[in-house]
Amino acid sequence: MAIVCEHRCRMGTVETVRIAKRTGFCYGVREAIDKAKESAAGGKATHTLGQVVHNEGVIQNLLDFGVRSVESLDDVDNGAAVVIRAHGVKPEVFERAEDRGLEVIDGTCTWVIAEQRQLRELVAEGYTIVLLGTPKHPEVVGLLGFAPDAIVVDEEADWVNIPRRKRMALISQSTQPPWKFEKLAAFMVNRSHELKIVNTVCPVTIRRQEDTVEAAREVDLMVVVGGRSSANTKELTRLCGIVGTPAIQIEHAPDLNDPSVFDGKKVVGVTGGTSTPIEDLRDVAERVLAMAGTPTVAARAVELAREALASAATPAGRTTSLPSTRPDQLPTQTQTHGAA
Ligand code: SF4
Image (cartoon, protein in one colour):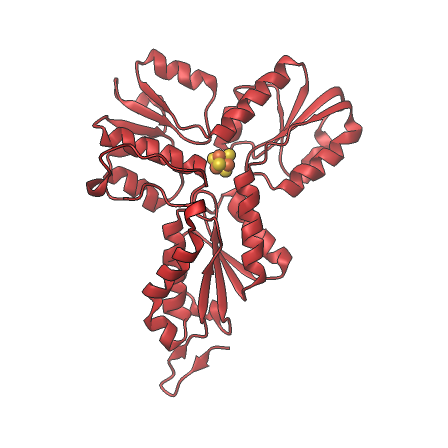
């Protein structure tokens, strides 16, 4: 219960906010964003093919650098640079871009490139391929360019439609939950004589889930930040529930309008999907502290949110994009970054 003072004003109960470790952009997203910014900073007209992430702040930040997202190669001016985002694309897209004389900057995540290579090999080896993934997700659309006959399955209810074949292979979209992949693998064992399992669930996704579960065990409520349709974000929310910690999922800090959600909560955790910038987690932490913190905590919301961010973003797992996120502070030389 919230404490209501004699003037009927609400007094919050939150004492601490903890940001889960190793959050922020995954290395694939970060690299694609950095490549786009570096191209634009070099004076090249630069576009991204599709939004690099569905996050207004990131899209605006890229626009500040002069990077515009386009839905089709037809929208890119001749001679301009086009950045392929981390999800990757079908091979035909590269061919079309080259035919148009565009400079293609390949931001496909190295993990996704490995998936594409694996699919090509499975096709050459004659396997009937089952791909666990969300059918219209851009990564899956791109992967199908390497294995057009692959059978895409998502929800468990659809698995009975998987045909029985002598030689089958199972592979996954990078951000699928590991438990789902394992369950489908077990399901497929008796649908084929030979089953090849290629586990392409991304390690960053797995680590993110582990760190979220660890954080959820130590707090009274979790706030999960990420795109409404992001599969890996929804999975984080689900995992908090499994641990027994209530969780709310939001896209960004302004979505938090109702302080009563935090009534009686002392310790609140914050985590985010692989496309959520870590700065958004800091903003969420600040909003929670300001709107639902005890009077002393609320008064120090900015400082405490900054501290929560500092203890989450360790140097070994740096999670921000370029050190400077403003074009006027862009470094003069290309910088290299370690993986998340
Ligand atoms: S989630 Fe993993 S595979 Fe997907 S872009 Fe990020 S690092 Fe790459």
